Amino acid sequence: MVVDDDVDVFNEQEVIWAAVTRARFDEDINFLKGMPRSDRVIIDATVPLNEAFPRKAVVPREALEACVLEEWIDQGRSARRRAKHAGS
Image (cartoon, rainbow, N blue to C red; front, side, top):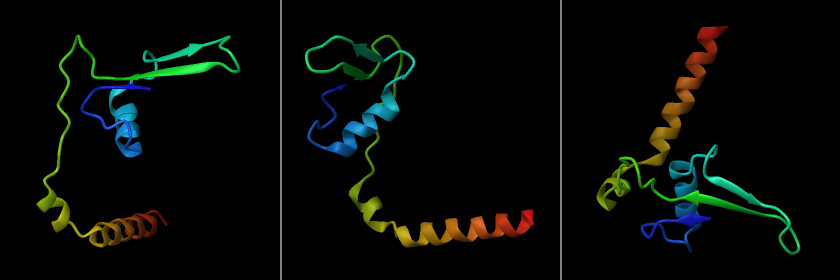
């Protein structure tokens, strides 16, 4: 996989993030057949050069620390329960 220099190649989450936010899977995947031992795949997860593309968003640490994940999980569960009962 090819990524830009704002992605830490040793951080799996950042590499996956780059793949799902920057790669256009109908254009940016190339298969190399007939390589020694097995075929290969190249994924271009770089920012497109010929179009405007937003910069990588960085959430301030204070905002992350202020979030209580359990509150969001509880809200999601409650909303699913309400939707399930409304459809019954």
